[in-house]
Image (cartoon, rainbow, N blue to C red; front, top):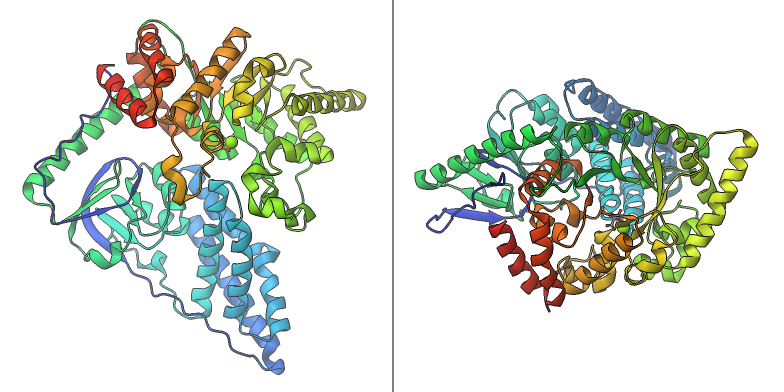
Length: 596
Ligand code: PEP
Ligand code: MG
């Protein structure tokens, strides 16, 4: 039997109030509601007489320093066992408080506009957030939350309306479901030690802070529950289903018994998954499947070690380039890549070259101003196109990656390839980078593998041609789905079209796997589809043998693999390629998952 949760039967259950959001951190929680009400900050502009401008600037500086002191105290109180990604969120906020954009720009606005500190800070916040909102990458777009959380802290100090949640913690949150409009990393850190059993926010999506942090902490969370603070009452009993995003208030005894049973199942399920950690991902018919991790921050390594991932199948290097005025140089990048190689102790590291869109470049980059980029960034100058447009920047990264390859098994992965010319140009630059390193006497692995991400239909259709030039493929379904369906992955208006199981997408995946295997090169998948246990059997049936995913999902995918007969799946799954809709495929997937 696979390790799986029994499907909940809600047929005869009726709760007095049921709210729906997005279930982003799995688990079932039962607890009392704790409504975290915060006054909306009202920021108004008023003029400051020239004689008082300096005093106003001083008032801003004092608020800034107070905010730093508050956050440093939160940082100091973080327990040693706290997941590193949470700590790094707080560190990012501390860095932001020292950044010119927040620490100095408002002073200039006060002087030039002769306005109050709150208004100057608001204007600066609006300018920063506008830059983030233009971003194409879902994760990076949510980084505007960082700006808001930090600005909010300073504004509260300036307006004398500090809620000081950190000081208010006195054990009353134990066993509570916290409901808030939004939660900052500092709030989460402060609460994690208080025994909170679930987080609910009105705001937020699958990439929001609450999501990422709750997942790291293993606390159930539902985000995007509109008007939760209005409908729910302080202290009322709540049930949270983080799997499906349900929130039940005033559940009766029968309902509570049902959810307690599910809680016990979840606990058993997690214990079982935990036991799998060191077991190999081998199917029932003996096929070994490679399960690797997607990593963004060097700190993510801790999680991947916890789930015993076999390596890093996708290291997103974008984070090194953002939120800074200067691009990271070769040495700085090398240092970071080398550290990761060392931490992997011989396991492979796949470094993806820069996957920035033109909208994610430095603020003073003129290319941002072009009409094409502003209107359709996903189809514009991004990923490999951008690297080739700026060979000096690309060469810096190539040299750094090559130097890291001397320290352990490193591969280079090129994002968003769509033409053979892009590969040829990349290879010319790789040769140049090697020649330069040779001249400087710096070691590198001359045989370092170079692979490409299949994210654009053109690449999947021409996979047989691309396979002649590359050492491996990795299918990036997040982009492949959006480009195949012409549906922006971030646009809620068209997300009904964003269907990984659309037969057109499946045919492209199938073509890629077949072309890769025919040419004798490895084919992996590193898009979100690979992390979705619902699709594990489908993908195995399409012949996929290498998966790279957010590490937290790895044990569950592994448990399914261990339960599968892949040869049988391959026979069964063939027919999806003749299906005509995602709905038909989804129904087939249901049957496949039921039958095993
Ligand atoms: C993808 O497109 O599937 C992928 C892994 O790349 P990213 O999500 O970073 O664009
Ligand atoms: Mg992509």
